[in-house]
Amino acid sequence: MQSILAVGGLLLVFSGFMLSRAKDFQSKRGDKFTVIGKLGLVPLLLICVSTGVCTAALEGNSWALAHVMLLFNWALAFSGIYAIIALALA
Image (cartoon, rainbow, N blue to C red; front, side, top):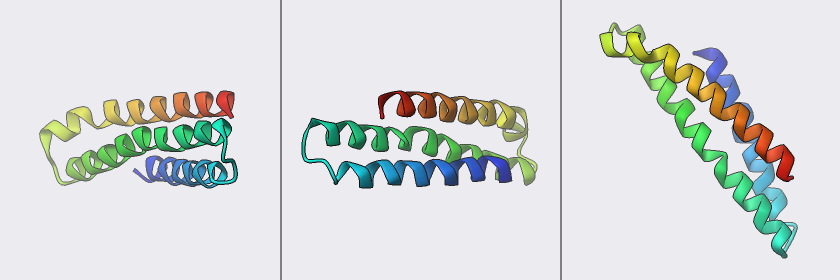
């Protein structure tokens, strides 16, 4: 659970940086950074859901125990895909 929260923190910092960089540009280039920053919310929300499921698994929820690694892997995959797309577009 700590590792996915660390990834979420790094993702939040990167998305915030992209949104602040978008304010520097008043043209179409700024729009690109705004979109990149806002797309960072998708993996961040998945990370929040994954953390909630991890907490439920620690409490003994049987559904959460069965699905916690699946959500964890999805969160890592979406974060990696987002990072690749964001770096390619930036």
